[in-house]
Length: 556
Image (cartoon, rainbow, N blue to C red; front, side, top):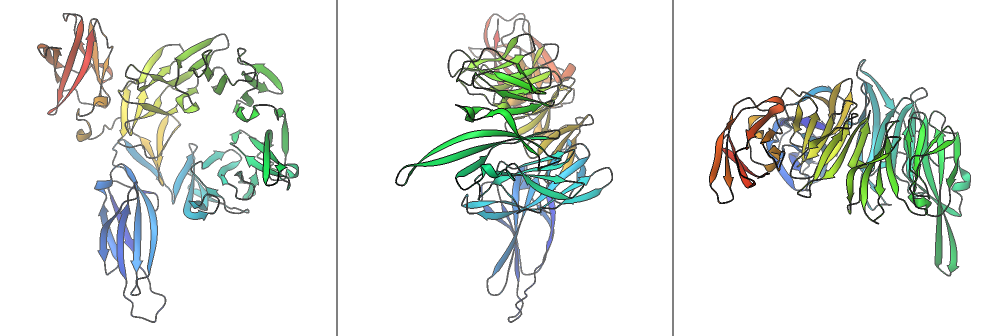
């Protein structure tokens, strides 16, 4: 039952046993729910074993913990925690379920793990401890258990699982011995899990230094990792000076014992800011001259040439092998833009602003680039640049949107107002669910969501239920262009039957100047002719299912 998905009911059956035997057996049972805020609610208390279906409607679109407790006559209580995802979304079609929580999916294999809480003296808090890790091949149903020959790693919020051709990559929590993250590779041929990253590099973990292992990148057969070697010098009794320098390494994950220092990538002033990213077998990094470099087959090529020595002016580069997208700090300090380099020129996608930008603010795939851009209301819109150079708005809502995934067809999954949406060039915006549970994937021309122990596909022909379609929120209707000269488009961000919508337009004095009804046209869009209105500010009111929504429009 752990990490199962309730829609919205879940079947529970549990019993207990008193093994002490010196007093009469009298057990009481309790089913409780712990919500995302830590509040505890009792669903049922009983003096006998519990079996039945429990309604979790009150916890729709959330992740909750079921707390099953058994108490004996001595008032000694034993409890079991099980995490449950409550999701009623109709567009999600169940494809496959495994025993525990899904961590990764590669189109044919599902990687899943069973995790329990364990106390970490390093963090002085409970972290997840890996109880078991397994891989299931969907086509055959074959299950392979991943064994650990080293100490069981803990997982913090930076946990990472990745399916590789050569096995499984697992990034654990910080090591309590070396104060650095621990990485593991599982080899399916030998069924041996090897700890990698700093193992076997004696010169970097002797008694005179503390090693810190930072983020790892895995592409193909190579693991890129960095070690910070920190040496301590006592400058006065009890006072030490810490001096650290990073050293970068490449390691063949198929041969964890083979570790090579990446020439030229160690030591130096400000090197703690340098980031390395793999792309198509090459390594992208930005150097002390403030430029992005592509190192391919030991040949270095400048992607940017306008850097400033000693400053990190170009960072967070991403590439599809042909185009490069990165964050650029413009000539005005602390002024950041998202820039595309197409091999000929730099093209600004997001205009420079004071907001610091991160890798999650853009993605690139097969010539398509999706990125966040500030809207007129200060909100974060999502834009899509096509290989042709055309730019369309993916998420034009009045509140911030966040990019999740971009596929090679230019389709985008994104989050807005704690809801998940899919944008396609054919159908426009489609709401997937009223929550952000799970993780999206795209394989074999199909979108998937892994949630808990279940893999779902997305059925774009199945709209959300009618109660989710009421016009009760500003985000659920899109008006464009605005300002407009001849006509405006009214677009709903969900599938709706072709019934007509009533509308009325009022001027700033509250006088009605236009009304009527509009029918759906292409992409669920409706058009209103405003040619005869005078230039100025108006208010558009739309009615649907007894609800109304009002938006300000500007006639040019």
